[in-house]
Image (tube, rainbow, N blue to C red):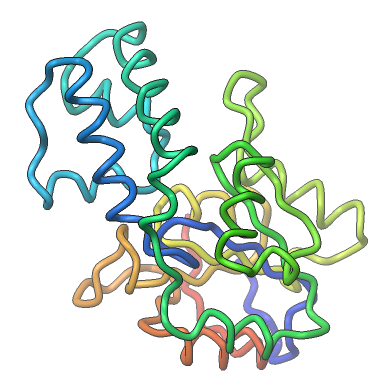
Length: 225
């Protein structure tokens, strides 16, 4: 991956959970709700953190070692509760408004595993939808991942890969940046990356630090094969 030469980015792509919104309490309550309906043991808080980020059906399937049909039913119960009530238990990370205001003039998009209409609803609830020009959703049935979405957007808008950056808190987000050929910033205040671990990509521990990098484009990212 080629390092941005110090100019500010033209486009920034954000994940939601663990990046913009601390959604743990809402996800926790939604998992507990789904487990109750399915008669399953409730995971500990530390185990529940692994449910933040990945597709929820996959999390249920892998944690409980159940088949896809049973996992899908639990996921439906989770989604029903989360979409009606659970998301309201989340909170914006400190500094989100300052970050988005500081990036005025830069194209900002959300790329998420959530349904796009629902993701917009969450962003509207936290009063930040207006900062984003687009909200994109992955489609696992059609095989459209975050990397495909970012690549298509960059190409359609004649933006070079190194003038775009993906910001997220999971390996999936990093892999999307590799697929799209854009830069990446992993946030360690979220759920997926640890502050004390050294990764082969840039990590930032606060909104203030992230704002500085996004405005200046000063990334020192290791090339990852």
